[in-house]
Length: 102
Image (tube, rainbow, N blue to C red; front, side, top):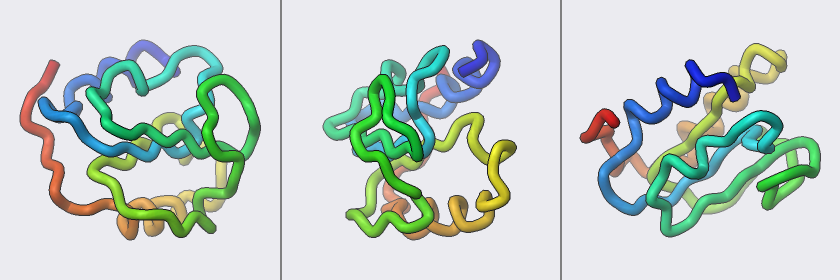
C-alpha cells in the first residue's frame, strides 16, 4: 500500500472498536489493519499471503455485515469493481461514520 493511500485511510478510521472486512488486503507493501481498533478484522483476497484470512472472490462473499469495509488499491486492478462496490454496500451495517481524522 502506498504511503499516500495509507495516509488517506488514517483520516477515516473511527475512534471506537469496529468490525472490518478488508477486500484485497493482502499485505504486499503495507496494510490498513494496523490503523483500526478492530474487534474483528477479516482480510479477503484472491491470493493467499500475509494477513489473508480468507482466499475468495469478494464479489461472491455472503458473510455477516460489518461496520467498515476497506478496499484500498484494488479497484484499478479489476473489471469487477462495480460488483465489489455493490457487495461492500451490502456488507456495511451503516452504523459507522468517520468521527476522527488521525
